[in-house]
Length: 72
Image 1 (cartoon, rainbow, N blue to C red):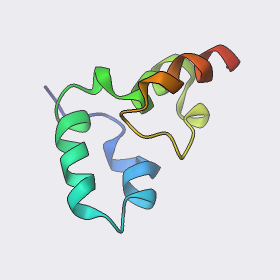
Image 2: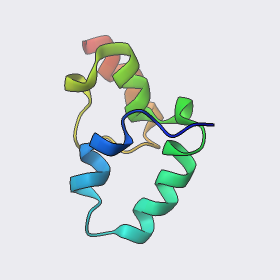
Image 3: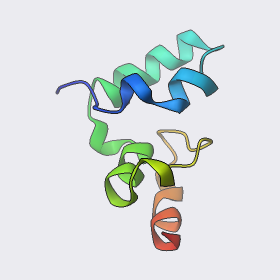
Image 4: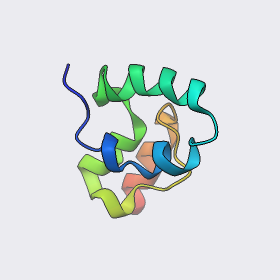
């Protein structure tokens, strides 16, 4: 799978995870360079746009996606 279109400008990895590079690299490999369709951030991005993706939303927080999207 191709690299996620959001990776280079993703505030989660470029700001929130900047001080945890090892953890960030594991998550990037799984979600951003793997199957981005299972990434909670990507799901919200596709449904509502970049500006609606909460900065504190972790890629594995799928349970929050439905709530975020329903609130629009």
